[in-house]
Amino acid sequence: MIKGFITMPKILNALLCKFPYLELFTNLTKMRYTKVKSILSLFFVLLLPVFLRAQSNNSSSGSNLNKLQQQFVDLRFGMFIHFNMPTYWNADWPDPEASPALFNPKKLNADQWAKAAKSANMTYGCLTTKHHSGFCIWDTKSTDYSVMNSPYKKDVVKQFADAFRANGLKVMLYYSILDTHHKIRPNQIEPEDIEMIKTQLTELLTKYGKIEALIIDGWDAPWSRISYDDVSFQDIYNLIKKLQPECLVMDLNGAKYPGDGLYYTDIKTYEMGAGQRMAKDVKRMPTLACLPINSAWFWKEDFPTVPVREPQKIVNELIKPLNEASCNFILNVAPNRDGLIDDNALASLKEVGKLWKNEGPTTKLSPLEDPIIASNIAINAPANSSWSDDMNIMDFANDDDYHSSWQSNPRVKEPWFEIDFKKDRSFNTIVVFESKANISKYKLQYWDGAAWKQIFSGDNAERVKLHRFDRVWGSKVRIQIEGSKENPSIAEFQVFDERR
Image 1 (cartoon, one colour):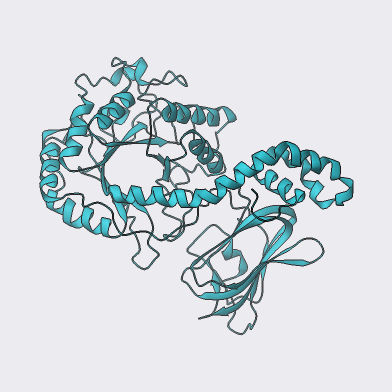
Image 2 (tube, rainbow, N blue to C red; image 1 turned 180 degrees about the vertical axis):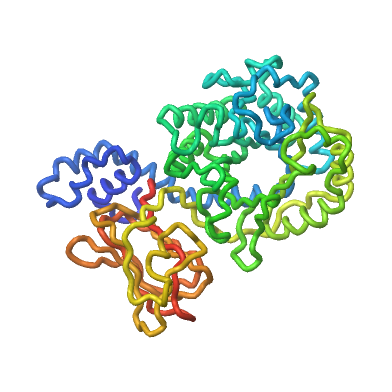
């Protein structure tokens, strides 16, 4: 049964959101209905089942994702395993032309890794399947630059997955979008590069059983400079969810986004070694934090003789306080060139297991909206506003910088801010982000070519004000601010056209 009454134009509109390749029909919704009745009827008959499936998926996705987020946080503690070509170079970033002949872990024992994780009462492991230099440690058909062309010639990912499952541990994988060997780098990305990424992810998510989470790196970071438009985040995210609907997607490079908003990730991530920390004054979110037990992510020649992170500090300064903040902690333990974990790290992990036990579920999280995964079409679009305060002009509100803001002049009684696309654009999501929660009452409107149409009118005191609605077409979008505690300002005014 369809809940409520759904007209054929609404169905067509929803199909356009779900299937962008039907874009040639977008003007149908602007024509008189009598002129397109036969076409709409045909769409109704042929595509209604698809629409109903899409609607069903959308209605349940949020609650299912919330369940998976809670389950991930409740895992509490896991093992990161950085093991790849850098292991043989004494550097985290090796020569991207390094020969596969260097990779030869003659004593590799994934069962040792798993038992080391168990000794510390960890619940899962995550292996670096491909790091930034592009070497693949699984049996891939996408490139010759892989473990199968090394002296080792065995699928490391398979050994890892089999060993961790055999020891009752969950399996997660790490994958880098940045790939210096295959030249998947900024300003050089071609369609065949994106196809390689999709092929590799498809292999990883179809050959090794259930993957609880995929940690993605080298994407939308200042040091990688590959944007979510260069390689479409929405496309990759949807591919992952198609292959494994319950696989959580975690982008390690989301630190620039507000801590209380889910942008381009299912789980908020913090690389603590890079100085990233959770703010204490923001909404509680499902979170991952990571650090190595040694001084670097990949094995170095001094690791066997240099002291590792102290067990007491791992437990009391990391696991416990992070878990209390709904943060899962993943500790990196790097195998050596033989493919084994060093004795000093093994001893530290055993001591952690004596000091800490997984006590089960953490604090229950509040329900969250699905993450933003589409491109922000408002970035650097022409902006306008009521009188601004001093230099804090309207262009600061859509510059993709969360540390700058447009600010209204205190003398303005009815402040407003506006994005002008200069032509009709389709969109179905607006986010208003403030550096601190301030604006409490406002209206959101769009210009349809003849009049301003209302999207929202009411109260919302959140710092991240997320609005999802049925797809509309308009050339302008604006906010009219009707109530705020202090002089209103907007750090980012964002507009998205999400596929749903």
